Image (cartoon, rainbow, N blue to C red; front, side, top):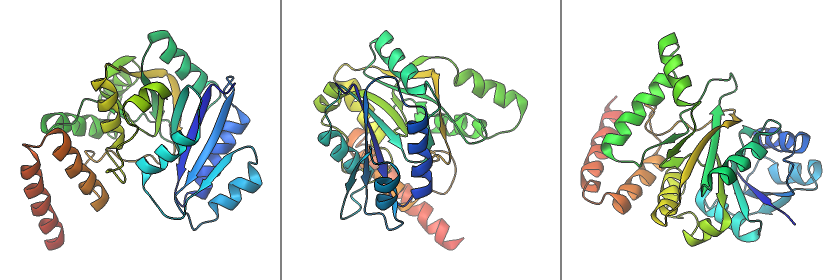
Amino acid sequence: MTALDIIIVNYNTVEDLRACLRSLHTSPPARPHHVCVVDNASADGSVAAVRSEFPGVEVVALDANVGFAAANNIGIRRTSAPLVLLLNSDTVVPAGALDTLIDRLDATRATAAGPRLVDAHGRPEISWGPMLSPLAEAGQACRVRLARTPRPWAQRLVARWTTRERWVDWVTGACLLVRRSAALDAGLLDERYFMYEEDVDFCAALRARGGRILFAPAAQVVHRRGRSFAVAGTRPSPLYDRSHMAFYKKHHPLWAPILRVWLRLRRRGDEAG
């Protein structure tokens, strides 16, 4: 019986996807598992590459790009194992990482868990955080900036943050292990988010039903490019702004009008610059 379904959403990342699937094939988790790639109408030969090079992987080839949340939901609904791993196509999974993540999920009776993420150079990401709010976003932005700072004191601080197991409000959807029953009870991922913030919202839905979210650094996964958290200081994309607005309308409706004004002013500033 399959114990773990690994759902990988792909959109025009054929080389990253190859590397991700190769890592799973070379060092597979010990538990019986199934890999399902949901392709968002890629135009780079991703579907053909997976079908020819990884015949044991299920491929769901969509006719249109439905977004990250909706594509993950399609993968979850097509599978049936008690554990589901949402995994980005730009990750590489070292031997034993998923088994360790599952072990920590079971040992702590967590609802969902995420590993320590590092980039291709071994630098840790801040892949977890508090529930989003204006104050929490400011704090998260500081943590992310420190993670990118080469100063030794900053690196020591970040190492301390990213090597201690802890309960958190959310872990990134780049590598998120969840119990299927809890995911279904939460209504899966909110498809209003085309991309960005769906992981924070999903973890909030799990917690609202009594679930607990674990950051489990004993498991480590490589995030080769990694998405920069939108609070990281890089110029946000329109997709992020749309998701950010949707998140505040849903969770912080009193702040939503203020955010709308701020986004409008920032766009004008960008256009003027």
